Length: 398
Image (cartoon, rainbow, N blue to C red; front, side, top):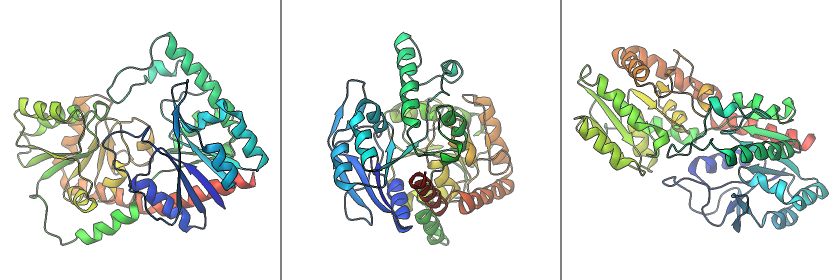
């Protein structure tokens, strides 16, 4: 089966995914933009080289509707003639605005698979969704306001329905996206979900670290990893830490990452008198070093918008504290089993959950073991690649 997958960037975890899918017998061709467009700053990308899948590139143009399009997509489809085309946001919009791509796909019997979170997407016809789930950018600027937003949101709903109804399969990042996606006309049997980090590498590194000298002193260590932008809400974590630090004198907060909020967060730590208790490592891209931080921590906390850092931390047997942001957390964290959810933006509730973990480290260790069990049984590269291949096969057969 020949598959053309569009992506906004090639990151270490997507590289691992494509390698694994390729190893299952799929001929994978990954189409990337020639210029960086939609991926966030401080996100590590892989260097172009020889992989077991192929890479190709398209020129990119920002269209009148405000999103980037792969303007060479149609020519690449005609040249490669894949069995399946996998489209991600925002490139799937191109199908609506350039119907000749659909013509090429129909003529060559190319099946369509959509791969999305989906994020900040209401059920079809439910614009009041944003009253309860306001949309923000990563700087926490409110997006879901004003007449023009309503016009764009209504238009996007109908564009999505047009595209979804032509999809042969849909791969979401999380299970609860199903109700949203089905409201746009997708068949329930065409819905698949899953996402993963490079669990093969992380679990191998975990074994290497056994017996390795510690990077840090033994402490009650709270860990956060991610880009330092406002919607990660690291300031909320710092505030919660300030409320429990006196009770646990051996506690420490380690913040791994870089970004535009770093200076403001350091100032916040200084103002609270915690500069010696909060470590800002900066960006860490070395996988061994990153693994050591996870391996030597007591709990992983994600106070705001997430990513795959929860998956990473679970590979190192860490209990998780987070709020529900994009929905992916609910497939990984199970209340009281391997972690806790706290109420969004509620520093008192976050503090309570931190106190529970730090006050009973043996129980926290048991919760961490459950995290590792979840990774090994249902949230790893092997499970993900099997699901992905199943979705591709479904698309070809239907």
